[in-house]
Amino acid sequence: MDKKECIVLKDATLGYKKTNASISILKHLNLTFYSGDFVGVVGVNGVGKSTLLKSLCGLLPVLEGEIFIDEQPISKLLLNELAKKIAIVLTEKIGGFNLTAYDAVAAGQMPYTNSFNRLEKENRLIIDQAIKICGITAHQHKLLNELSDGLFQKTIIAKALAQQTPIMLLDEPSAFLDYASKHDLFILLRKLADEENKCVLASSHDLDLLLKYCNKLLVISTTSIELISVSEAKTNKVFLEIGGGFI
Image 1 (cartoon, rainbow, N blue to C red):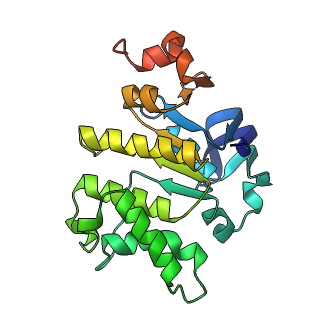
Image 2 (image 1 turned 90 degrees about the vertical axis):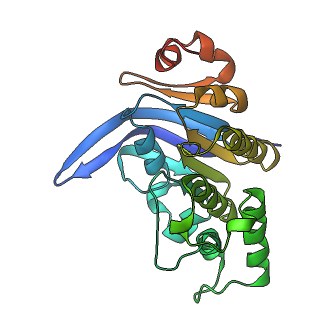
């Protein structure tokens, strides 16, 4: 499949705004992520991995420079347009009164419904497929607060799948999964990159899984940020430091 530029950062400074001040976390980034990329985002806690992902999907404003999504400045995209381009899975739990796992996954199809948000047959087929792929069919009618951490995480990933976006961003998606489920998840993400030509970025502390399934790594430290191939990882000083000598 042809590779196309999905995300481009041009001299972008990322962070957040607090009262009247801007707090810069990642400065002057120039990066390009392509369709078919499966990028593992690595770094110690607090270095800016979540800041990057939240900025890429518009949850945090770009402090300087610009982020382009599908060649369009992110600041110019309407929320509904952005929802058809990027799906994000965050570590924060969501909830809601009598909200089931099915309801949560169905929310991924909302950008494709009419003004009344009515789900048609074609919408439900996509929702059912996402539920099946993520292995939560037997749990789809349970309330979200009845799900284990692992099942909840799979539910939110199913929602992202149902959103049908060319870009998927995941913040610690394997954090609450058992060992086998971690591998199942990364196999699925690799398949989406390879076969669906999606651009997938996933932050994780499971460095062994990133080395096994990703094709690129974004290595973030307090002094640098590098986009490298997985084959370069074991000779990359910062990556080895992040691994603490255990990789």
